[in-house]
Amino acid sequence: MKATVAKTAGFCFGVQRALDIVYEKIGEGKAPIFTYGPIIHNSHVVAELKEKGVRVIGSREELDRLEKGTVIIRSHGVSRDVYESLDREGIDRVNATCPFVARIHRIVEKASAEGRHILIAGNRDHPEVQGIMGWCGNSCTVVQNTSDLQEIKAASGTKFTLVAQTTFNYSEFKELVEFSKKLGYDVSVANTICDATQKRQEEARSISQLVDAMIVIGDMHSSNTQKLYEICKQFCKRTYLIETLDDLKPVNFQSPGRIGITAGASTPKKIIEEVQNYVRNEF
Image (cartoon, rainbow, N blue to C red; front, side):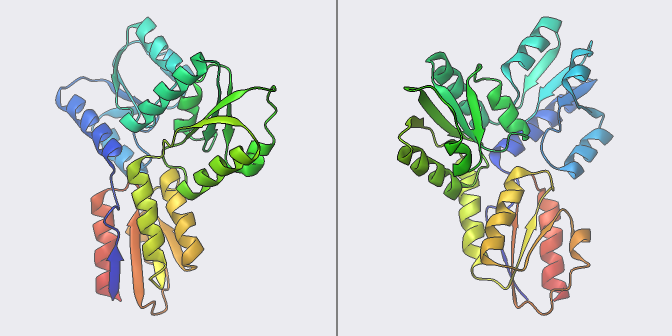
């Protein structure tokens, strides 16, 4: 079996950094340790951390009831008022926000202070986007496509700043940039899609055009994994999205010939290797 594994598959810098921070605090014995939301979008990693005593805070109400402990801010970042709330309550906090996400917070905070309307290319329901919105003041709009841009009702003379969720599809972001210009918007563009995401998407696009079947590994709640699946599916109809090897075993590949493998930024190396070894040994 010819199996091509993407060089960019697996943990990105921001994910590895966040996990290093959590394990550092575990090593220091700073119990109880909490993360505000899952530290990364991978249920298997979160389950392993739970076994080590790390608990996930699932809501703002739960966070507000906290009286002691160390709260680690998830890699996706949070809104400014979460920091302020923790500081008011005197709760020890550790910031594991991905530096690329933190950069977006600074950009939109500054632009908002200048009176600009913030456009965020991304998924409104994703925690990263919700966190970004929390640094925008009262003037922001989340857009996913050109139709969303066209529906914006803004006062004449409004100045916009366009940013993107770090895992947004780069090709779709370019479309938004070009369309905003066609609409005549006065828009300042900050391409905030992280470099690792762009390279991962480009490699997935390249591999999926050369293989007979494509495997994308990652948590079903992972935005960047979903984007990889969508990209690969465009060029390889036989694309499969799985979380672990167990999801792959029932698949009937029907002598696929060449198989490509990529994985989201929150996928542990161990899971990628299990899938890789299975493909090479079973077919």
